[in-house]
Image (cartoon, protein in one colour):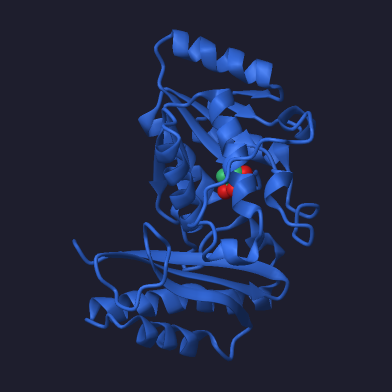
Length: 282
Ligand code: PAF
């Protein structure tokens, strides 16, 4: 497995693969790879013949008071994970390679980025959609793989690809959880043992919500109340707890068809998100 740092090199590697008739898969990441990322690489390896993992902590998607500086970075450890999972090449550019000039051009998906995480992270999704557009233009993958854990991100990227007729398929893979239910996230590394216990309340509340919906409860206010009763008293400071339409990301008063139950909260200084996708059509 190769590690390349320039756009010229990754384009040459991908062109060679494409010339051999290979189907190209891209797994965009910010590194600090865990089993959730491995599940994306596994899916890419299963669906494609040549798999690129990009590792780039994208400054454009962090706000001024967020964790850009302390975001975990360990290229050697990440390279081992990628190699073991069967990736063909890592693209690990510098910020100067990705943004050689002060950016004048941004990709902004409107409306759906105002809700959930977008409400408190101004400019975050603009940074994500801009860097993903750049990565899609650099790698030209047939498919790109994202995790359901970042549900709003996946919905926003799918919408961008549809709106702008980008010639690739977005594949969204299930959230990977620890045995105790905690959704895997690179930011879990920030949590102390006590905070890890508090963080479990998030997935526990989602599980209870799923059970209540399966038992026939469809009133969003009641479901949100139930979840809050589980979380409150623990060490989670809820930023939002919402039941939303999966297309518009607007709140729904009743669970009908497909909805997303989404939570963001702070445990200590760490911001965590989690969600479940509910499909009552099935
Ligand atoms: O989910 C992430 O790790 C990032 O938001 C992404 C998609 C790699 C863009 O920087």
